[in-house]
Image (cartoon, rainbow, N blue to C red):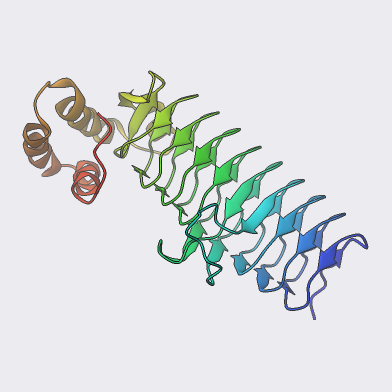
Length: 261
């Protein structure tokens, strides 16, 4: 039997499953068809609606609203889900919605992410692991965010956009196209690429040769002044000696939206 600690003012619906060591704070609501892994904690006034699956050792600060219905007029009440991994931190007033029936049906968040106050993850988003979303960063529906991405405060990402691994989006930038891996984006009306995230790559153990190859790829894509086809041909050359550039090239080739340039 679970040794979950539930505050007397909290409501846990029949059918909810709480793992070992789960703590549910004052005035929380945990709905039916919610599964919570061991060691996860909820601060006061959190709500979790199902179907939602939450892994172990997550921390939800006060007033988080998790697993709510998608904010999509086409949603007709069909069964849709939210899956959250392990060891994530959700600070005050975070909102995360479930998926939609015509968008894959599941919103997913990986492991070891930090989502700070007032961040929002909309329906059908796919968020990787080791990401940081600063205060008020917002994802519209169907956004894909790969691993080790940092969104600064007040960033807004348009629906269906993708953000590649290790990208850094600067404060207040609005993203309306795909952001390749490793790239930094700064505010300029809509966000525009402004170099690579070199400092973040150094912190994650990228050596000088790897970073130099990524810089060459960035120059080919954003500084050369050529067309995207010309830039891609140059990336193919560089990719022969760099797995990172091959990953960047694969990202470019797999997208449906225009590349942020």
